[in-house]
Image 1: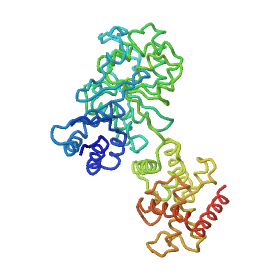
Image 2: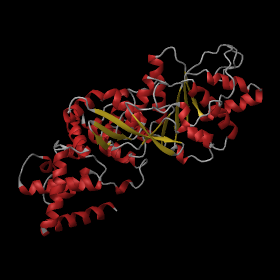
Image 3: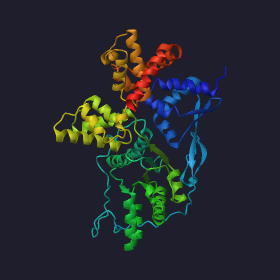
Image 4: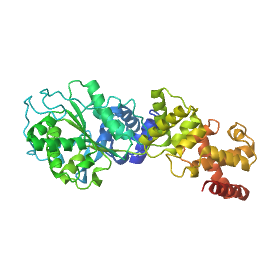
Length: 479
């Protein structure tokens, strides 16, 4: 019986899933689509050049094993890669893949810009006027490292790409690496972490971090002093250039033009560029199309708002660094209520500690709740798992401890399942955290509880009436 592409790839995934952790599987194999199967050649589609290189570097052995098990010796895997190129898409294939070269991206070979000057007397815009040395200070914050950057679903792709760049600057397809996301989500931290990692393993490479504002001011100053060429030549000497907040280049036509020249020179010479922005290149306005097209040459990775588990990990890491101990309920309460960005999350923790120190009070849940009113709008409307447990246990004349216990009495099991159902529906807690609030149960128990409640609501009128009444009570007491 002939196998189709979906069956072959599905069986490959089963083997792969048994050999890697769930998160890696979700990140690197869920997005893959089987395209065609001809003889013993399976073609799969991956979303980017970065995906292709990552699979080849980390999972090629596992992929080969899975494919040979399905199609036998001599089987081959080919990739269909979606490559964004100046607003359009084109396909490339691996094994016989023609990895997009710089000439195929639309760059003209004569776009050289200002001639390179290797004279050691070039003016360094980062040192005090009068000093002759050209030694480049990286301007990196040594506290921003990969070890202190907490990984989660919200930033896993960006972090993985950054780590790959750090270990092989200028030698991957993701050049430039564009990191974008909202305020306080870790773009600057990750950019510094990449630079610090490169400095750690490549002593011979010059790394430079600069904010877009400082770059603009330096350029303006160079124009005033008549050393514009020195300014450009200085930046052309750098092996790894990190520019933060490039969205501020908008409407700065002359700055864009000079950065375009610097970008071209570095890219053509195999140097690494790392850029950050608060928005994707396609959403940037008042930036020259030629420059935007270059921002899209490599990999564009976004950093999203951290989920609850990641926020808890961030707080725990911060506490560990500062030698602080807080109860789990306080940590979860802060993480639950500050969900906008990492900067506000850390700010809330610092304020909480300061308040406790000044007032000589222990940091308990009550103090945390008082403090959070200064950080969270509509704090009185919060719905916590503890509140849900109290409301449901009161309704059924039970105690919260009974809900958390291991007893299998029918009335307690139902009350526990309803509490889990409301916790899933009305809070931002993960399944894992909900389970922890109910005696350390796992996420599968929470899933089963929610499904049971949904099924009983469809078949048991008394049960549905209880759930409806509890819903009303929650709304009355929280709005």
